[in-house]
Image 1 (cartoon, rainbow, N blue to C red):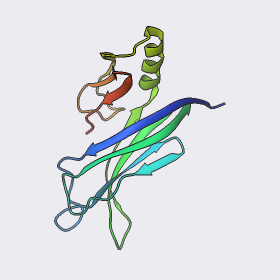
Image 2: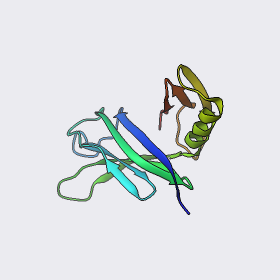
Image 3: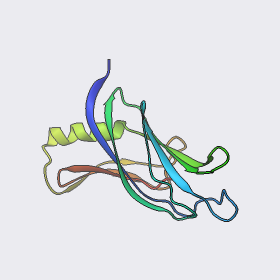
Length: 143
C-alpha cells in the first residue's frame, strides 16, 4: 500500500561540458522520473553548458523509489540521443524529514545527513541533506 509522503521539489540548474551529439554542439534537455511520474526541462539549442533553472515538483509516496535524471540531445529527424544519467535514492530525504520533526527544527541551517559517492549514486563529491530555514535541500554534483 502506498502512503503519500509529501512533495518533492527538484531544481535543474545547469549542465557543464556536455558531450557533442550533433555536428558541432548538442540540444540538451533533462528528463526526471520519480515512480510513475515524469517531467522534462525545455530544450536548450546548440549549447554544451546549458542553464535551465527549472523547478519540477513531484508527489512522493512510500515505499520510496529512486529519482532518475537523464540528459538527452534532441534530434529532429531521428530518436533523441542519450547523453548521461544519474540515480538518487530518496530515502535519505524522508529520513531527514522525520529527523526534522523529531528535533522540531524551524529556522537556521542544519546538516541532517551526508551521502558519500559510490557506484550506485553517480555522485562526484559528498552530497548533503540540509534543513535551511524551514526547507530541505539536497546538494549534489553528479557525474
